[in-house]
Amino acid sequence: MPGAVQAEEPDVGAGPGEEAALDIDIIVMIAYIIIILVLFILEPIRLDLIAVLIPVGLVFLNPWTGIGSEEALSGFSNSATITVLAMFILSEGIQKSGLVQIIGDKISRITGGDEVKQIGVISSLSGTLAGFINNTPVVAIFIPMVTDLARSTNISPSKLLIPLSYASTMGGMLTLIGTATNLLASDISDRLIDRPFNMFEFTHLGVLVLITGVIYFVTIGRKLLPDHIKPEEGLVEEYEMEEFMAEVIVEKNSPLVGKSVGETLRESELDMDLMMITRGGEQFIEPLQAKSIRQGDRLVIRSSRDTLMQLMNREGLRFRADYQVSEDQLEEPPRGQKLVEVVIPNGSYFADQSLADVNFSERYDTCVMAVRRGSELSHSSLDDIVLHPGDVLLLLVNDPTLKRLRRRRDVIVAREMEKEDYRREKIPLAVAILAGVVAFGVTGIVPIVISALAGVLIMVVTGCVEPTEIYEAVNWEIIFLMAGLIPLGTAMELTGTADYIAGQFLLLAGGLPPLGILALFYLFTSLVTNVISNRGSVVMMVPVAVDAALRMGAAPFPFVLAVTFGASTAYLTPVGNQVHLMVYGPGGYDFMDYFKVGLPLQLLLAAVVSLGIFFFWGI
Image (cartoon, rainbow, N blue to C red; front, side):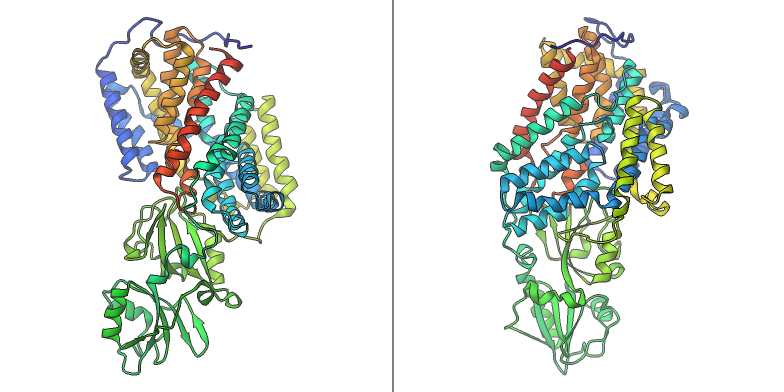
């Protein structure tokens, strides 16, 4: 039976029926929030830089915000921020052990070629794992496994990757440490109503959400998922490279004879790239910059047909009409030469820069053949394309380059399962350390932040994580986002802005019962999260939800939960969570795919979460 939270609540905001007065402080704060929202939506600069600007602006507006330098910097010393930082490193220890990969390898044996089984098992496993380690490495490891599995069983990867991504975010609602958003919401709840979350505070509701999601994807959702990428296609066909690759032979009178590849490319103003040289039965790919071109060389060139005709007319090249570019002709396994896809994840060094800016081809001795953004393919002017999170690059690489790319956190190598370099002997120890962190967090012997930091120390001392891997393991964009957003929530409370917005929200709700208001908070928070970050929506919406509950005379804690779940289960756009963007390119999705699949799920979860909160906690 539902039972309302009986804990004594602090006197926050206006009481039921009272109207918060609109004053200059609230007007300034609302204007500032609108500016922040616009910056989050347009992203003229990186999100972490926007986050750093937030406390700076609050201090400059101190006469109206009441935020001084100490409050502005409080986010960096906040226990939620430090706990999230520690959890990234603990997740790294699990990832480096190879446990997730071992679990992933078992999926093909369990599911065979059954699409329903594949969706069910992949979503269940990714969701369960994401309850205890960060969902970003879970999805990063599962992407190549899922794409390989899809092709080996003749199923489109587009059918499997959205369920993988969405389920990982649902799984984050199984425990307090499942997402950074949970920890942030817990901290705000503690500050506002003296009610932080415990480790398994909402696990029963999280299980219900995950089960609902899995059932949705193996029934209704499966029929709504697209199949943009045909499983029988190779990478050459999938990226439509046939029209953009050709082989030419260097004639005796060609002005290119004796020139290096680098010199040739620098002198040419044409949009082309030299991918491979075949000479005397040998094939050469990057690094080609210093290699001289000789008479009789066969050059594989990436360009449009118009560019190729100009090139042949000017440079003494003969087109091989009988040459048909195929994956087998480009790849040469004995020499470690192969085609691979790499995904640009959130927070990547390459994001918001062009391939020319980062000197990608020369830096990694690779040839970039095409760029895919969702369902759109680009074959021309590749060096000028500014990369976005979710973009996929088709590369022709050799073994040393592939190993370097696997080690970089700025890219995810898709369709290429890494089989080596895991510390499998550390699996029992890494799991025991994580279990110890959870156990101490549950018992309350020490605060979760201390438990997590102790776990990090043991991970490093025991070799589960190398000291040099610590800083690379942390997603610093999320850390700076949390640290920058926390003072914004404080300012909303100090100025009465949260209370004022809560009053307006209740007026617009038109006298709905508390359960209807609760459902509205879930839906509205999920809509906000689909536009800005989930951490930003929690910071803005939890204070409003608390004040709205107090105005109605309801218990505020259930409303905090509604906002927390709404922020972590946003499924209408690929920007609702960073893992949704990670599968955007590999699945060949477009924006509307997320909306078509996500809208019924969003409405279904609105009912499940609202009724679940009412049943378990009351209102």
